[in-house]
Length: 475
Ligand code: FAD
Ligand code: MLT
Ligand code: ZN
Image (cartoon, rainbow, N blue to C red):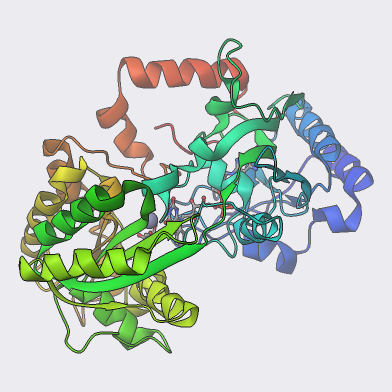
């Protein structure tokens, strides 16, 4: 590992600008910013810049740009693809947005919230709730992931089926460009056709075009009636048929519809304290259905009971439970949310965050599971996730007793194996986690030619010296 250093004049200027709270240089303060959540990468950096205002960030970026020092934006550092950590060179500075954490405005009439980039997603949800509204984006990492991070990755999560990805929840942005210029685009208009929609360039750019410093976000009416079901279903087709039945009955009520395999639920029960199967018998396939309406008299529980009864009669649902209380609903949601942690505790695993047209999900799960078991005998496929969006986490757990490093050495074979099936099913090799550092080598074959060329032209125009998050997204 190289000894990380910065040009002394730059370090001095940053120290003057940011002071000890805003500039971390001690090894023990820097360490948590160097490794990603999955422990796939461990980088090095001379310092972590932690500005407290947009202007401070702009000033620091100007200094780094003048010195041609590369910058790595970091929010909650929950990236699944190593997107927010520096490389091993020791020449990239980490820029943490954590101190830009104010909710600047909240307006229940416009139904908008203006939040700074470092606001944690859970805090944004809570702020909306305090104003009597809902900010619907929801994912397992919401206690750490930030507004800047979810926008920069165009995060999906559990409620995409109803409210869309992070992009669809954003009306305007404030950003600091790679040369330190501030773009004041924090409009909160529902209609604003004024040339290129610059704001959308930054969403999903994974920090390669500049820093998001604040965003205007859409809020929605809060839920006044809810129902939550956990069901054992006959197979993957039954899971999809049940989704259609709920949608046909009341499309607007389906807030989340998640698939879990028996293997994934087994891992949760075995490895996560306080998780128990809410049904009498184990099954190979489960779904979680979450219904919500802003109408207090929507009758969602009755509706859920009716749909489930009919689905049982049709042989689609084998067993089901409807939550009797908010506490039970939270316990059921935990089974789904703890999948990533349970898999981590069960041993080494390889993630395949892929999507296909919704109708092809059963094929994806069946074909990939079989191909993976053939590729690595004894390995344990753990498909789960956002079936209503066609986004399945086609993850693979190592065989019991296999050396973890030997299993992880096969990561790219495993991803290639699933991706070949995904390509055949007209899908995408990256549904919601992004490219980061993990999937750069896949970009050429999936997005090469005109598409990647246009992306490079945009990157070169905004960041001609290649200072923003180098080594990410582009091969
Ligand atoms: P970071 O990890 O810090 O950064 C992510 C990327 O955005 C990096 O490229 C970084 O450089 C860039 N970035 C961060 N902030 C800024 C900024 N202000 N300006 C410019 N660039 C920036 N993702 C989903 O989509 N759906 C899920 O259901 C989901 N579930 C998860 C569950 C768990 C347990 C975990 C650990 C992760 C999960 N993720 C999920 C992945 C992750 O939480 C998301 O990608 C999230 O959006 C990252 O937010 P963050 O603040 O942690 O960003
Ligand atoms: C989730 O939906 O829980 C994560 O995005 C999936 C994963 O950990 O693979
Ligand atoms: Zn997910």
